[in-house]
Each structure stands twice: as C-alpha cells, then as structure tokens.
Image (cartoon, rainbow, N blue to C red; front, side, top):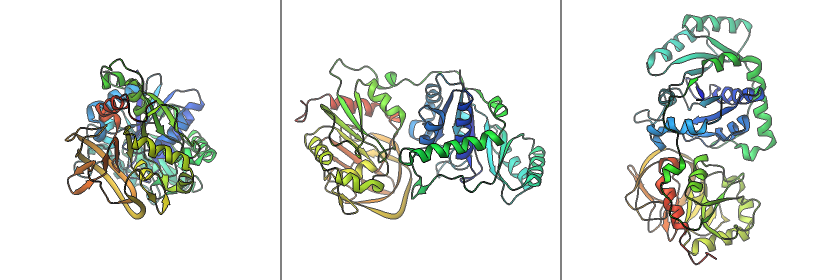
Length: 450
C-alpha cells in the first residue's frame, strides 16, 4: 500500500506549488516512484505534476466526486507508487464558501495523511510560532507533521524561524531562500499550462526540483508519509457497470495546447465503457479520425490560440458536419467556445447559434446543477456538482433547450440534437453513469457513421 502526505499552506501564494512539484521531481530523480495529486478542480498544476512525477497528475475533489470516492481514487492513482504527494488548494482549511467542503484539510482527513505546511515567512519571525500553533490546534482530524519555511531572507532569519517552529512543537523540514526569479508565466486564469509552455515548463520543473533538493530534507519528508487507509480501489469498470456486446465506438477527444482541461479518469471511464479513445489536436490535425462516432471537447485556453483554431477550416467543417449528423458531442467551457459562431470576432465552428467574447470578469465557483433537457450525457432532472472557471461570455447564455440551471443563476448552456455544451465543468468520476450513457449513444448509428 502506497504512503501519502499532503503539502498545504496557510494561504494561496505561499509557495506550495513550488514545494510540491519540486518534491515530486526531486524524489523521482533519486528513483522514488511518486503518484501526484492535486486537491480541487485545478487543471493547471496537475500538468506540472505530470512532468515532475512521470505519471498522470490527478485531482481529489470531494465536492465534485463525493467524499466517499476520495480514498478509492487515491488508491487507484497511487497504484505502483511508493509515495503519493498531494498538493493542497488555497489555504489549508479553505473550501466551498458555504461550508468549507473540498478543502485540503478535508482531503487530508479522508486519506489519513499528514500535512506538511509551507509558510511564506516574509515579514515575520517569532509570530510563526503563533501561526503554527493555531493551524495545528484548529482541527483535531488534521495532523500537521512538519513545516517548510519559504522565502527566508537570511541565515539569522532562518535561525529565528526554526526557534519559533520549535516553540510550536513542529520540525522544520526545509528552508527555502527567496528566489524571485523562480516563476512560471501566468495569465488571466493562473499559470500557463505545461502543454503550452513546452521546454520552458520542463525547465521550470527542473528548477523547482533543484531548489527543493538543495534546501529540503527529502528523507525526513518521505519518512512522515503514512499508508493510505485500506479499502476498495476505484475501478472504472465497476463504475460504468456491465457493457452490452456491441462494436466499440471511436470517440475523438480534443487535446493539445488549446484543450488541456481534463481529468485522467475520463479516458479510463470511456475505455471501460468499451469506447476507442483517439486524441485530436486542433492546432495540428485537420480532420477527425475515420469512423469518429462522438466528440469530447474539454476546457482549456482556446482564446490564446483562437487565430490558429479559426484558420483550421477543414477541422471546423468536420466538427460542424459531425454535430449536424446527430452524433454525441460533449463540450465544456473552452469546448463550448469552440462550437460558437465566433470568439472575439474570429469565426469558429458555428455549431451553436451564439457568439463568445472575453471579458474582464472572472466567473469562479462550485455549482449544484440540474439538467434541464435530455442529452447524450444526462437525463432531464439529473443533478450534478460542477465548477465554473472562465472569463468569457456567450450570447445568448442559453439555447432553446438549456443544459443546466442552478440556484442564483439563469439557465445556461445548449442542448441541441446530440450536442451538450456548457461552461460547467464536471468530473467524470463523479457521474460515471453519464460517461456510460455517452458511449452508449455513440454506439448508435447516425447519419455520419460509416
């Protein structure tokens, strides 16, 4: 059974991504098999985790998949690894605004995993003891096992900080000096994705590994990790249930630098439902694979690549033809934008009678949504937990048959023919029946099927 530990922080911006990613890469360098995880609906950090660990970065989000699936998903993702490193989200106890659900603390408690707290020490000295004491005593279900001091200004500063940590009864596992040059480029929604950043992303991960290896006691950190609790291992085959004997539909999934927002479990569930999954990069590929029976358009940053996406006229035409045939098409967020008539005046697929535009307003948060229309994904009345994360607007907001409604928001998204398109991100592991339904719909011949 793999062991696990959680890398958390008192607040966002403390340096936990640097420490967690650097720790994954540094351990891998010395031959330790590391399973990387991220708390919450983040799509960007797992890309860097994948580079660092050489294994798919996975998300653990109790809001989107249910608390009962967290440990089974962790056991699934950690299979064959010696240690699982789980990077937290925001501050340790920060989660959904209403009730704190989905916090790093909740995930640590569900996994029975100790927490390594990364603290930005700029502007404080002995006050660190009070901070650590407060975090350590706040929730008895969460065990803070050690601290990494980040952005330490000098040797004297480090000495004072170590004494403060000792007062709080916590071991110091490392002290990282201030290095303002260590950064990964960011944009309006956070870091540039690893897929877009290419060799520079690899260089950034290497720099994080160098920093952590030089200033953190790796043996001490790994020594804190504890075995994941015994129990069932998440199984995509069990989640989708029995699959009727039928031909395996070929399902194209957009990927590449423009469409990177997806979960590793999605492809696993599609395959378990007997689909053949083929990745399409719309910045490179001009046709859909022969025999494509359905299409998945995940989120990403199409707005950063809109000129190239618009210039790929053959692929846009192929997507439009597939949608017109009635084949199942599932689009989330960036995928929704791609199906619109245009994005910031650049012509796109025109599958949906809507236009998209970037805005200065960030839309962010969990949504408890209900499906308003039958689609290849969901039956009308189905309820899901989802998440929004975008700076875009689509006009109109919804079609004649909207996809979703939730409290405090107007109906949103589009259901038309076989198309289900919305800004709402869902985690396939939280609604595996929707994946099975989608594959079953793809196996039904349409006008496009050879």
